[in-house]
Length: 283
Image 1 (cartoon, rainbow, N blue to C red):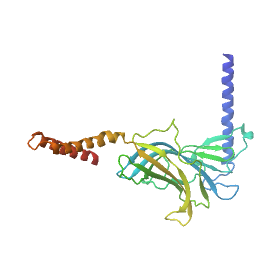
Image 2 (tube, rainbow, N blue to C red):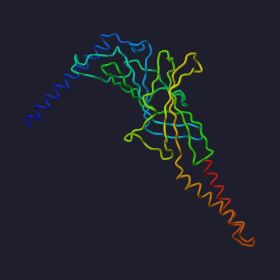
Image 3 (cartoon, rainbow, N blue to C red):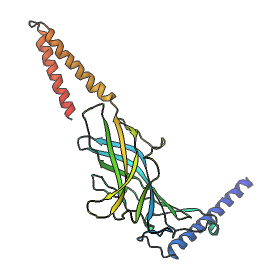
Image 4 (tube, helix red, strand yellow):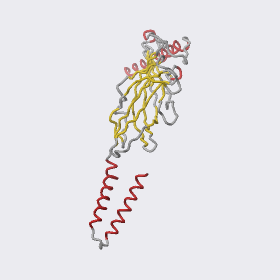
């Protein structure tokens, strides 16, 4: 029991010093350093800020074939260096990283370029993780609605290709460069929710530079191409097999004798079944 009390007192003692040291780090970086969050970070090798960008997919919420819109839930990861926000951990009780509100530091204005709802901002401005080297990590959650051309020629055994393109609206590639941290978007089993209708084949990423329609400078674009295929089991059971059976019934009706009283009833039932199936397909 005495040992337990000693451990508790020691842990509270360490937490108290840790909180005080974090406050001293904050004062050094923001109060005594005259940090300006509106200014682009200073770099050792020049004026270009390299933003390492990756995308974690948590769910394909919906693919609206009629309006050609794909809704996804993602966690875009931003990592960049700001040498003005660095410190020596030995001077602050070996504190190597702190968490701060994202509104305190400069943030890259990377937005979803091909969104369809006009919402360019993230869903929640979460905290940043600031490392003693000046590395900043920012992973805000975001719900994206992007344009997605739909090709239904092979429905319900079709495959679709939908793109998500991120770009900095105000910084050209002479000031900000986008770097893909991984070959494509990734999913984690613990946080990914499978879609009941669509299966993800792959999501490769590519970085390219081109001019925006309203600007003369080249801007880096990072594009994630979603290769998804439809799961056909539901449509096969509820549409393909019933339509096949109704077509078979229509053919059988021609082989019934003309004086048979069931021939007219069979043809009427087949016609009404086709009309009902077309109404369901339209919806």
